[in-house]
Length: 265
Image (cartoon, rainbow, N blue to C red; front, side, top):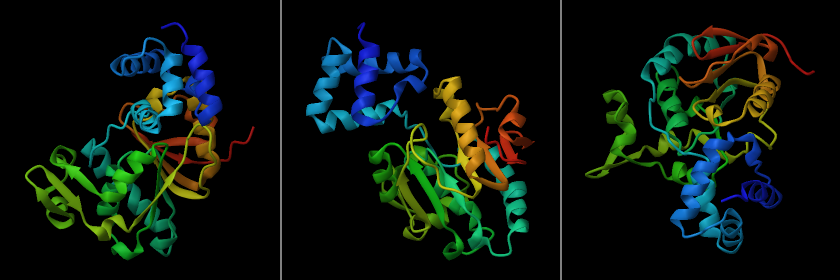
C-alpha cells in the first residue's frame, strides 16, 4: 500500500486527527493490518469505506489510539503517588476539593478509577472529583459503564477489589457507582484540542511513546501552560522527559515532574 500519505491528509481533513504526529512506522503497520483484515487493498479504499460506515470508522479510531489499560498498572509508581505525591498536594491546599486533577488519555477508565480508590484513603469519596479524557468515545463509554474483565484488575490490592468491585459473572467485575460518580469524562484530543486549565496533577501514562518527537514537544509545552504552579505531571514507566527544564519542569521522583515556571516562548 503506497497511498499512506494521501490517507493521512484525507483523514485529517475529515476528522481533525493528525496522524503525522504519531510515529509513522508504528501507525502504518497498524493501519495496514487493520485494512487488510477488513479486505481492503489500499489505504484510500479503506478511508472511503470508513466515510460510509461509522462502525468501521469507530473501529479504526479505537485501534489507532491503542487502548491498552489496566488498574494499578506499575504498582510501584502508584505506591509512590500515594506515599509522596498526594501528601504534597494535600499540604498545599486547605480543602482537598480544591485540588484539580486531570487523567488525560484515560482509555477505559482504569487509571482515573485507580486514582479515586487511592485518594479515598485520604478523603471521603464526595470530596473527590477527577476529570478524565480520551480521544476515543467508545473507550469513554466503556469507562462510564465501569465493567471490567478480571485480567484488568489482577494487580489491584485485595482491599480495593473487595471494597469497590462486585462480581458480575465468572470473569467480569463492576466498579462501585460511588467511584464512577467521582469522575467526569470528556473527549479531548491531546494533539488538537484545548486542555483544561490550572491542574494540580496531570496523569498522562503510556501514550506519549506513540507520538513523534515534535508532538511530544508540543504536548509537554501545553502541559506546562495548564499546570498550576508547583503542579505535578505523572508519566508512564516507559516515558521520561529529556531536558525537562526547557519545559519548565523538574524531576522530583522517577516519572514525576513538578512545574517550576511558565514556558510561553
